Length: 59
Image (tube, rainbow, N blue to C red; front, side, top):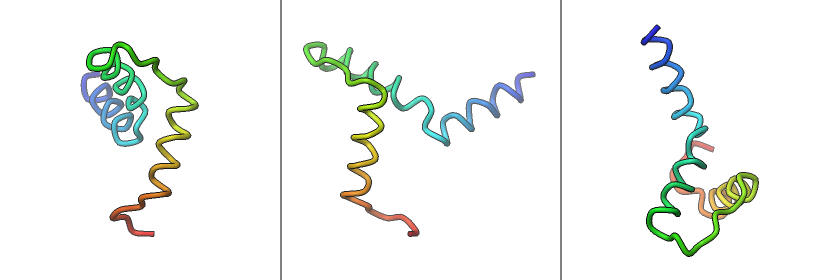
C-alpha cells in the first residue's frame, strides 16, 4: 500500500500536478497582498514562459 502511494506521489510530482497548489501556497506565504491567479491562468502563463524561453530541452 505504501509503495502505491509513493509511486502515485512520484508520478504526480513528475507530471507537475502539484505545481499550482505549491505556487498558491508560496504566494500566500511570501506575497499575501497579491491575488493568486486561477489554475487556468497559471498554466497558460507557465506554458507561455516556457515557449518564450525554451532553455535546455531536447526538441
